[in-house]
Length: 243
Ligand SMILES: Nc1ncnc2c1ncn2[C@@H]1O[C@H](COP(=O)(O)OP(=O)(O)OP(=O)(O)O)[C@@H](O)[C@H]1O
Image (cartoon, rainbow, N blue to C red; front, side, top):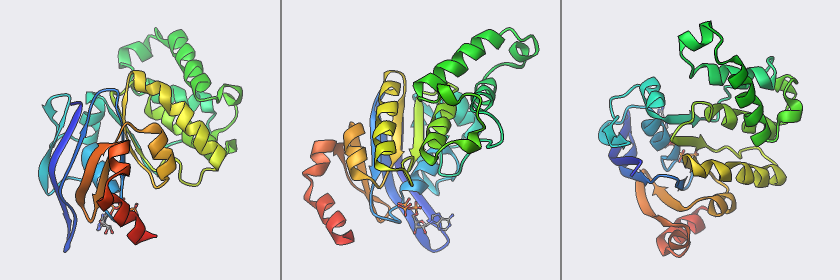
């Protein structure tokens, strides 16, 4: 397993947000984290990314116990996250936003001696092409549509060539067409990266994910392939309960 979170408990004051939650993700696997509002999806993502410290439990990544790692140490180990809060610098061009994200992963030596300038240029343009943004390379990021800004952020989150990408509701506020394109843009990254994605759009998640974990009131209700989860009557019930 690439990622193995087990026995995760998270208590906020009197509220138990997660209780014995678990998540296992293999290499080159797209894994969806679903469940009703307030079931603990974002909190579990944050415990994995290091943005929240679990009250109890263990997170292992690439066979290393990372429970006590800082977010920076987790990033260095190959984990990358994009949350709902934007990390794009709106007044900079798309080109410069990607360049900055790539440079964050270069050594100071390489940057000072500019040995990587041409290579970086090629990488920036490749990433922009991959995310269908090359024709906007020298526009300010602020001029992009909401969907395009999300794609730019996903590209930036991939700049360090992570082994695992964490996405929290990337299609929030997107049009149907933008959602469809987002699915297409994510597929090729499976060749070199796994994905954990929190999403409310069940059609979207069913189309792109290999496996799903369903949370309900901080606990794992079910975990399995998309068809196993679709056939699970307890899962059907919580979604009916919500409707
Ligand atoms: N920092 C915090 N302090 C106190 N309570 C919190 C905090 N973060 C989350 N919670 C609570 O923990 C519970 C789980 O929240 P979380 O955001 O993880 O759920 P979620 O499944 O991601 O919800 P949604 O689908 O609405 O985004 C909720 O009751 C929420 O109010």
